[in-house]
Amino acid sequence: MKVVNVETQSSVKRKLSVLVPKDAVDDALKHKLEEFRKMAKIPGFRKGRVPEEVIKSRFEKDIRHEAELELIDHTINDALSQANIRAVGSPVLEKADYGPEGDFTYTVLVENLPELGPVDFRGIEIKRLPQPPVTDEQVQEALGKIQKRLGVLMPLEEARPLRDNDLASIRLAELDQHGNVIKVHDDLLWAVDEKLGKKVYEQIVGMLVGEKRKITLSETRGVFYRVELMAIKYIKYPSIDDDLAKTSGIYSSLEELKSALKKDIEEEIGNINRMMYQDIIVSSLLKSYPIDVPMSLIKNELKHIATEDEELKRAHAMNDKDLAEKRLKQLETYVRIGFVTRIFFDAIRMQEGIAVSEEEVKAAVRDLARKNNDTAEHIMEKLVKSNDIETVKGHLLNDKILDLIINHAKFIEEKEQ
Image 1 (cartoon, one colour):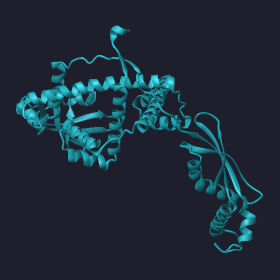
Image 2 (spheres, one colour):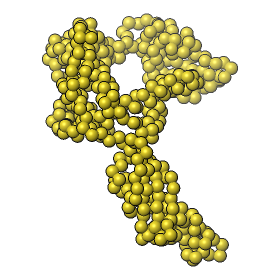
Image 3 (cartoon, one colour):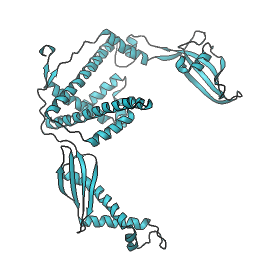
Image 4 (cartoon, helix red, strand yellow):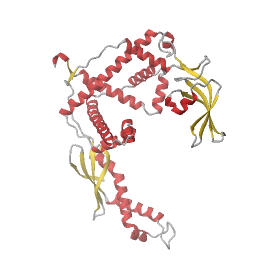
């Protein structure tokens, strides 16, 4: 295989022509001929025993086409490597020909990852964003989330009727129109409000523990249930005190937990600022180093993201084409920014020799364990099992690159504007 021509059509588009020598072509044709001979069903011949001449006369065009696809598939990666093309998406075949000497040539159009030389990231002007102090209210809100997470369902000791906003533990029997039990659901928990369904809600409020009631959803369709109230429950939340802090196994006092939460909140605010700084940095770099984004990459990533995006799902569910189109444009912008950020950061990483050590990964895992009230060993096990450890490394690497750029930025204070 030999690359005979590389034509640059744009900063990301390449036209690549490849020649495959006669011996490789002969092998591919022979291989495909044998495949067709084994599979062909022709009257007068046993399967697999059809003479080559008959196969060639009947299937020559198909054999050559299949050989053509095989030759391209077996050589394209080496051709791209030889041409120093980092392809995005699948190459598109433009033309293919068998030569008079028995060789084979093909031409593909392919999009290439943009190439950057040295990137001067020092001295980027950034308006300094405020870092407001963490308030007691924010710390209390964080404590409240921990308290809710540790809430435990308890049976209500008070003997009273079921009422609005209770949690009802029930046994539910589905009945046919004659009152016969079709199916029983044990130990269901219902939050008693109108979200449960107005008809059900109205028919169960006022029940006593141990009471059974037949409720009707639709007499015309024969939808009936028998509900037995097993218990009225409530969520018992722990007190916000030293014992709450000790449940984590990390903190010995409430004050120590508050201090850690304050630090986490400060980090969250700082991370928001850092993401805003990153957007400013990428916009600034784009002015000096314009980057074309390969459309095949945009389409592939957008297709993947669109299938998971909740806002786009809602727009489609409402059949709102304008909203769906607006959301797609937002997602496309997100994909573009993400791509150029990766290109710039990857160039700076290689330029500056930035890497993440195993000890830095372990420290990040320990921090994740602390925030999730878990052990570092268990967190690491889950990350490895789900193949997310590389994601952690990627985030750490991105942070180190961003830190380097920010440390060399020129911050402009508000008064300088």
